[in-house]
Length: 484
Image (cartoon, rainbow, N blue to C red; front, side, top):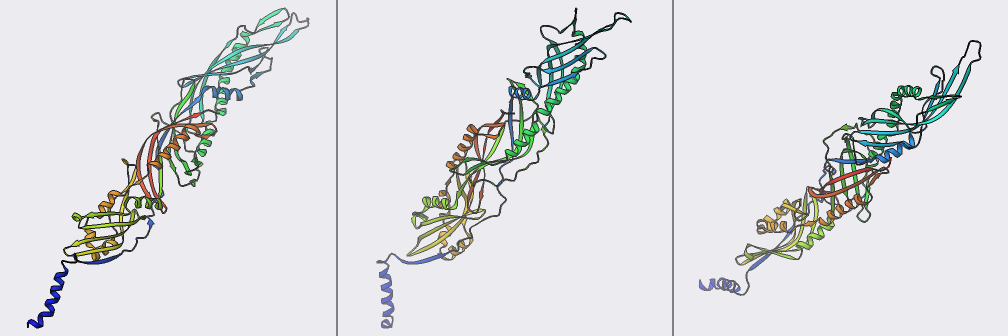
């Protein structure tokens, strides 16, 4: 019996002695995980946050005055019939009209040249020949008017004007032979009768020549054209207006002021010139005296997946992660990022090992993790949370390397993934601010000036080509109408 068991005993002895020579038995498993499809979920196209932009608009009184002096000229009133009152009068604009404004009223001073013709007719007796003689003269007067000004829902200027007139240093006199006739008593009643007609005519001229709707329509359409901010980054500013509100007009410091509130979508991105369909339908104007000066502009930073993969490689590739008190370790050889629906897929090419008693288990291959991207305001970077193994990877790990599926490796990777976008957002911020500082003309008559004060995060979008981070820039914006 002893002899029959001797070979088994020798084999057992050899196996036991091997435990003192070799650390233990080992096996290697290859992970054959299938890569998830690299697809971005079909989400609606990015829309910036709807922003109620209030633009303080300042129109210099001098610019309106120049415009009126160019347009408002010629004969204002003419009566060349001598019958009845023996006086014919022609009233023409003389010299430059002056204009000033206080609160919601505008005051005009219009210098006039008066041409008057008077007839002197005398019948000394029935048989004597009648004496009929006419003489003419020129004299000046100044019409003083007061107009209350506003706007209608159709963007038309509405004025209500009243006025009076005053003579110059000398009143008009007509010399008829030996007679010197003062014409003031003849002209004044006629002029006072005509003041209502003249002020209505002035209202008509003001409203027709101050065609605010024309400028608003042009600005409404022009502002929708994308404005290039930077050639190197192919960055564009886009404004999509929705409605228009306006505060009552008021005058101060030589300007006619109001606030125009435009509800718009405003964005800056680096994806090239956007395709914009211009909305030519100008909405009705809404009067609103509770407007503020705040704006919000959506800034975007797009990180191509190739660049994101490069950053991930720099962060995790060629690193060895140890856990379970040093019993287990995984080395990452390569890494890449692709889209996976609403999540990011992290591909890690790894080799690792773990010890269990006398045995060492090894793995090689690719594992795939999924995580939800978010914008971290403190670091101005895109990070991932809720990282877990892709289902196919998890199934294969549970059958070949359950020790890797159950440890904290995925948490270690989650803590390291960080895609900085501070430089891109700073560049977009700088480009926008430079545009507002230097060349913010959105219309030949309208100049924009503004200041961006703070940036706050909004959302992360995954596109087929890259990760788009969206933040809101808050500040103020002013518009000056410097040409009419």
